[in-house]
Length: 196
Image 1 (cartoon, rainbow, N blue to C red):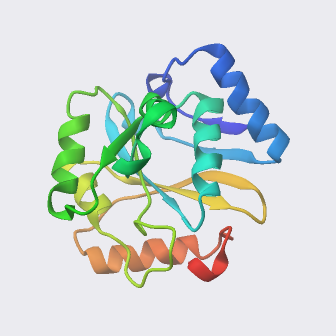
Image 2: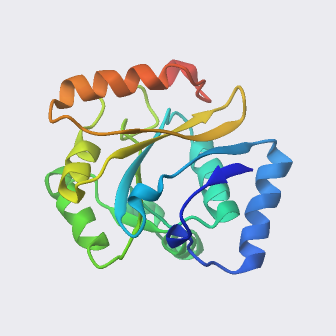
């Protein structure tokens, strides 16, 4: 693994849990690359993960989070947060949200991470695994609220690489920001290209 990040972003999960993540990443042939800048040390910041076209994105992402022991908060459908899977998702940083009430989603997410000292808030800009015309802009609003940039994280299924790439600073022009970010992600191959 060629991935670096500030120590303040370590989740300090049990070692066997980290080993399991490393074994899953190694056996599946994936690599984790890139870095998170010291600029965000001891702060919360936004990371978007794309292309998001398959349930396998979450499997790779959760294995990677465990392998590198990264402190991440992410949202998921509230219906997934039940039973053993729900407990596991919360342990990994998952925050259940009811997407049928989208108006308060961003406020609710910010409220739920307010008491957290630091960490990465991971979001999929498409908002779904299906093909969408327009990406959601909530991640840009969250970044502005946190006075944070956005780390662009990619899943490349052709190269089997999860890459923590460049940092993007929102300009306030959401339409242009989305166009620029989408252009960056065109270089990566999703699991289901027809959904991207």
